[in-house]
Image (tube, rainbow, N blue to C red; front, side, top):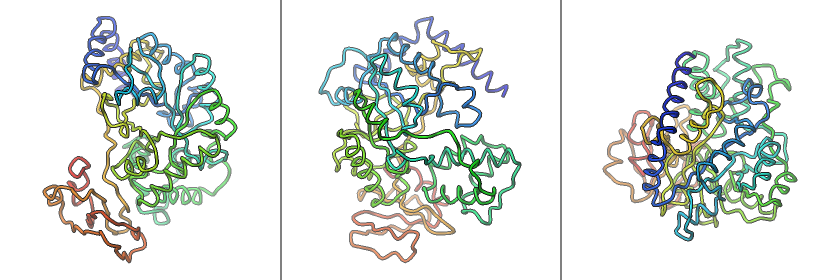
Length: 443
């Protein structure tokens, strides 16, 4: 705890110096030159809440921002000289179809939480700020909660009850999630973030089912918070000019799924929003920020114009609209030395001062496309482009490269996905072939 306080104090002090000395503006000008003339800052939010302190006790912290801080972010961006623009405007500027007079600031929301309707929508409407919300459509109009919220709640229950899970009745990877949390090596939210990015939906739901059963069931095992919008609320926002994009059907990390699932989750989520709201859906948000060449291919083939990541890097004029960079924001990114709102810290976040100084380390979202995660000794399968460099493949030990331009019969039902026209790298254990697991090596 003391370390966190010291880091916060150091960051706030640095922000104050950068802001009031004028160095921040020089850094902004540097980022502007890197970006090709204008900065295109796309910010991502999840839940905008009325009582941040209260909600912090029961929800994933990094998803939360108070309504007041959210309003201040918009005011701060305007005061710093940004044009608060739509995503379409940003894509047009990147493509050279429009010339921007100011740097652009684009507001996005992931997941369609009802908090956005309750607390962000009124602020946006009052201030005349455009925004886009990405919807996982299988959750809209339901009482369901996202797997990440359910797992966070269950893991808190495990800790509060001092419960010792029986791993023998749980999916094999369960210990990778619970072990670091129960041993104090990782916070619950950090462990969840790492785990969700590495395991497909079926593993997450298996852990949820097992924990609920071991904990004895009951309504208290389902989080009360984290409810999502219904279609009437979505339609009301759309009538006021707010945009909506697709975010899969079931909030699925698609780099961990076969092409048939990728196509279903992307296409049907788009079609559902268009049918329910009567608007054209052109934009997509990658769950967990992870994306692959295969996912981009599916988006392009189905009429999308953009895909947004969670890579905290500059967007460049002429850059790829299917790999748009976003800065994920939450309450603590604006907390100063004394725990109150800091204007200088906020604007330094917007101007990426800490990135320029090398104090932040963006996580890249571009991944190999994994068709099946290893389960109980089953091989991992990484789908690569046919032109993948042989030298990179040769580093993986041991691997077998198979050309599957014709249908291939796979006897193991866990990996029996229809795969055609690609190369498949089969490794008994990707952990034994670290080079094969590095996206920069293979893509």
